[in-house]
Image (cartoon, rainbow, N blue to C red; front, side, top):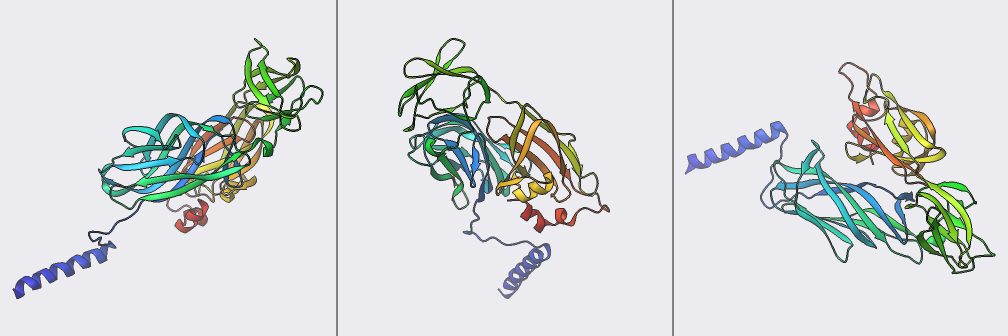
Length: 396
């Protein structure tokens, strides 16, 4: 009995020594980790307003939502992920993909994604089975939403739930969605006869001799006089025209069926790319972001991710050599039909960078990617870029 106890005690102490030497930890049965750090990366076809993703009321818009969740279990059990919008409804679902952020491998969705909760919640399952205890995932959802009419600017949380088969469940508000009331939305331009505007701009039109308060006004195509949409004038007789789905020549027809004003809506093109595929810290740390567009003057809103995590606005300013901060992760930079923006990555961490550019008042957008390689041993990399603590502060 004494020998057995001594052996058991010896084996236990040996195990503790091994754990101590290699810096490991012992997890006893019953303990549980939790999926953590659910975080929105981007939501396309929105405007950032005070840190919120803004959309317009009474619109149907296609969006690409990207968000991250850390430490999802890989025990082969079913993990359910739900994404709930605060108002309106998912009108259609184009695609849902899940990626393991550590190696960019695909994580299969079990069955089919579906919309529940009166159209407000997307739900789908994954059942990853692997040797690691948990994985960090990135979810990309391509969907179309019907945003409702609101009586005033209305905001609410974009919510993600993870019902994990092994770890604790997660319920996180990853972003704020703002639905803007027409009455408080600033127009990009008033309509002048014969003028060209850009798809995505918000236009207004007033004609006190032809349009009165609350009149129904029609937008028609010049090519065949076909009806595009009806718009109700506000209490001042002003008509607001959203051009997100327009492309071509149009006119405004008043309540007396008279043609009031003609205008064109063109689609802005935007092509961005880095002039090289990679840079190296401590070596060639600069690249140019080349921009081509068919529009002479406008504003870019620029955000970025590094290995799937949002880059802070202050870091973007350092990389681009300037820009106006819009929110924590977005800067504004003037654009033109052809420009080359110098980018310096000496203060950035190593990793895979994706820069996302959205024109502030149109539907034009594009992405550009570049690899930031670590410094070669012996080269003097920037200490701010190489420090793990500093890396955390450069990301959101």
